[in-house]
Length: 204
Image (cartoon, rainbow, N blue to C red; front, side, top):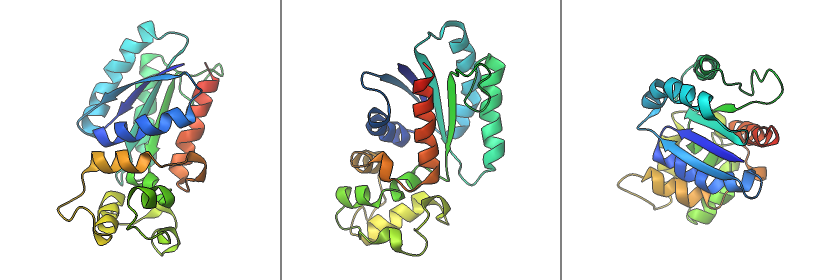
């Protein structure tokens, strides 16, 4: 199968480049469409999907991943679903015939929550990070980290002695995702993403 992957920023692309090969069937291919933020992605997505509706082959599927960013998750998901429906493409939420072509998923509240969901990967990438981080109050549920997961990750890494001038998001995403093991990730939104990608692959 082949995936056309839409993400809102380069760090998400880098993370999925490492993660999707561990989730998809062997031999699958992917092409990434990376935008300069969620606003641009949401604005351009409807026309992009209408284009796919005219020539999407039987083996091709579309994945759209955006951050929640403390928005109303249901409203955001509905916007994504409407864009697919308007293009005439079925989604996992409303597949119709059982086969579907578009998977819309939301990282809650940001991609960095997925990194907190695999503390072992964080430690492997940055050995100064305490291995007990997941047991500490405020980090036990990566999807419920308050004050922003990107900001929390920056504080954790800086406390461990890394990036005193601010974290480079793409570099961090590449380093952490290189060590991530999808089955052990404790982020619920990550596991929902994994289950959706596997269902998408099964629908080909």
